[in-house]
Image (tube, rainbow, N blue to C red; front, side, top):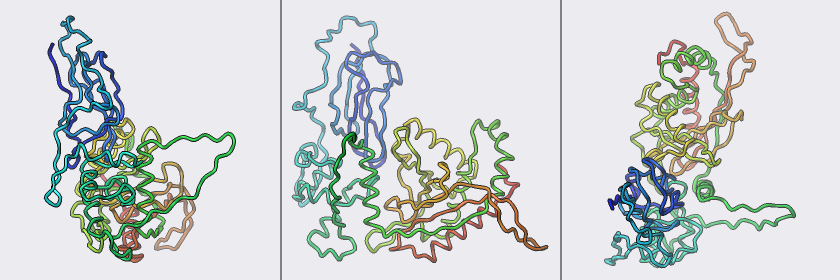
Length: 431
């Protein structure tokens, strides 16, 4: 019997393990090349592992819910289609919960002690939050209780607690709550009663992560939002002029979004104080301008794929990046690297005809731009021959910012610069 090992693939530069959320195929199933075998989840994104070969699935080495290190064999496929002598009773099936496959241990050195990560998680199994084996190992070594661990605000994607968060917590453990880096204590929500006919549905894993991340962001950052209206008539007319020829030439639609991304990136280059993160009292000025685009997944949850180095891309490059990431989001094909490294985020309220909104900052960033609906309305048009009333395409931009580092003046200058860039968009722009 020719065996092929399915391994947990490398899922991103900083990701060392993933959780098996669902086996799509069962032992004995016939696989075609590229058939999805298993759904996995990391603290960055949910994904699927396809089969690179044809054959029969003869072994599943982990259960749903198990956390598996990158590079570990998770399943075996028999690729010998002509071998009918295989005894299916000899094929390995899903292991029992008490018979976990031993995974090569990842060692964490703390206070000259080495802990086996694979054995560190049992003390924290009752938590509703996801913690990586590395975080659990450090917590176990430092005798951090489950209550303490659940109270740590995570700086990772969707509020995930990282190794650095635990180390920062240990540095400030027991210090006065007046310290800027002290973790904000959790606030208990009021009890909620149910009424006749109500239906209770538990949040899925991603919705829980989003909920925790939103609460964490409002606790960490004092939010202020500024607004400005923009005349985008030139942009609307230009798009109407080029959209058909662009679709015929590139096979893709051109929306307003890439234009806003290009202008936002240029304004960030002009005002780099907004393209930063805070680490306590330290300001981290980001070298790259990586803009996240909030996108809805098919299940209604939210994800933020990132356009890397947006300020260095041409308008055509941004159009293709936006379309590619949007298509991946709709089909659940985003990879971990697609949603890492954001330094600024844009969310589009206008896609649902909302005039504007006050978005929550995507930590650890310090600002997020909201794009409102474009609508026709009467406006005063100034000319050398005097003012007159005309019909223009107007939209509202909102910038929510962290008032610890961004003041109203800086936010106002950024929005004004962005307005000027958009209103001066040339109708002769080539793409």
